[in-house]
Image (cartoon, rainbow, N blue to C red; front, side, top):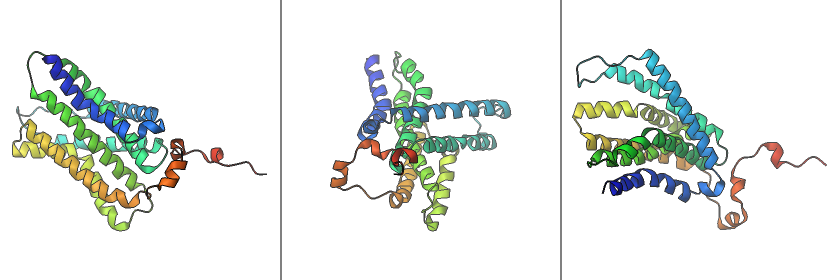
Length: 252
């Protein structure tokens, strides 16, 4: 029975990532190693953040069960470096905009899943006693995937020169919300006295809001879809960007 529970939790946590990779078309463009590079960027950014937090931020010494508002805000400010790392992963990938977004977000989210949830699932979900925490962990991994896709889309839109001026202020607000989402959700959960399921639902609402906002900003910036004639004559590898010297002929 414990093995069956572990299988359910494992499928709930990992299969959405596999389905996203296969059904989004990334597997047809040989994007696996680009996702690995984005995951390596995530690991590097987390190591730098750990060293910085361990050096400059002491542990909370207040009353038990209290909430260090100022300390959590400062830690959330350091966590904003994730957006910088995601922007770096986004810039390293070539190709069309939607492919770059998916590569950076999927690689980043997969690295987060492997480093933060793999061991707890393997050790805890195979235990003797049933615990809802592992199902919550699997659901939270799906929410993180949607959030990272939305954050990558917002970062990609922020670098576009053709972004209408009227959308720059909402874009800045959404990026600020993405940077401080963990702090805002933690503060709201503490203020409202939410339990684990309530905090998970709040994270889902936050990810849905970021996703809808990113979709509103992203759709006008994406190129029009290819027609059937151009799709039948194009090769998947042509969607990735090449250096100028690779696509030009020498002068006669």
